Image (tube, rainbow, N blue to C red):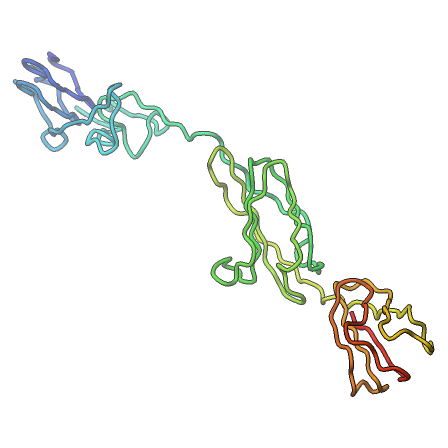
Length: 288
């Protein structure tokens, strides 16, 4: 235990499992304050004790005598104490972790690995007009990134249209076709992760998608215009660069009597299985 005397101030201690007496004769111009007692045969004798800051309770020691979460000794001490008109304790906040010093402990604190910095958006520039498949780019050095694109400023609910993780070392995201709508305003932002810790979101930037590009009109190739003697199961061919094409064959120039109406991928259509009518003028057209 502790045996005191005059001019002793006993602060911020744990007195645990003393077989006889924990503190004695801290009297005269002395004081016992901000201490926890537990499991002692006798806690205090013949001492000046500040009852308001002295208490009992299990400190919840772990195997290495550190304090477990929930210990009553955590943040229970004081960093400033005046006794007899003199300052006997004045700790800088950097000397302990938490709201106040722990009782009976040498304290240290670690914030873990440094978290990622806030990414800086690079491209497309804020307020740009972009294609329906833009590439978004930023600058940072995190392990990986989360990229969000939304039509709503709060990036939530139905307004969030794209939320994707991008591996570290990659500082851009290609937005695939089908995600964005034409002539629509979008917000986008990025945040990084390092060591399992997610960083703060970047500022958001905006872009507006351009109008959907319509394909050029296909150019008919064969059979050539005005051909005669064409077989009854011909193959029609054309030039064009659309995703798919609609092909119509009719027996009149106004296409009110359509005999073939098909959608195909590619630039040719073999008529069949039903043949065209023999000796009849046919008209055909293609749209991408």
